[in-house]
Picture 1 (cartoon, rainbow, N blue to C red):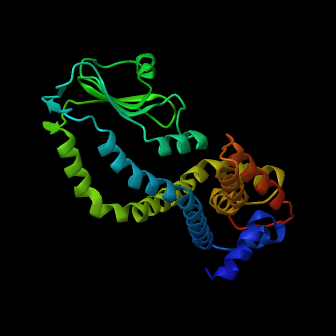
Picture 2 (cartoon, rainbow, N blue to C red):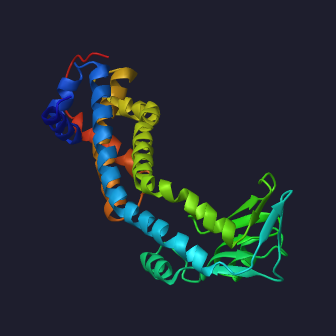
Picture 3 (cartoon, helix red, strand yellow):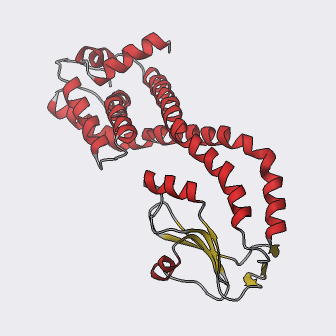
Length: 287
């Protein structure tokens, strides 16, 4: 579908009863091609916008965290993980502070709890803990005797048991060797991130094809009972492939500019698009 034609179809899909009237005579395959062309454009736009926001942050983490870990890693600290349990040669707990430059920027952006002071706290005398206990450590992650505990994106905690983790010894020398080993791959971090953003965006957008199996029933009801159009479920599904255009655009704008997602808004806008665009009379329509 040529670019100029795609823009015309997008405009018609948002609002044009005349366009929807001609749509009744077009095959389903034509609308499916439009759907994938349109979602591809949205995925590219989303990737460009979110990649522009995230890539600098990721590069900053990569370029600053590795040196900071080595700088703040406690001298002489050695942690041994064996048979699913961690032991340390230090009595009590040890900690790796959060780099000040990263801490201030992340708190300012709202991506980090201002109470956090440490990247990692190691306390192999503690066992699996709950959220209240974890808060007292003021850390992004905590290594206990039998698990790695860390915060998730929703503000809760995740507990990853050490059972199944290969036996290993962690000290400053080993950490330095590991960071040196991954250095050649750092340059691929940004392209890989962009690729994952694109694949994720395109997958989420394409998932609406399944959503339409249900939404088409409501669109069929609008067309058949309220607009008196003699259409079947297949044609209602095809109409839905275009009626979701306005919902896609509105949802993307809300997420990009305001970072919000309103429940059921996508369905409401889709049904409203069908309602207003099917406001024409036609005695016979192919099903």
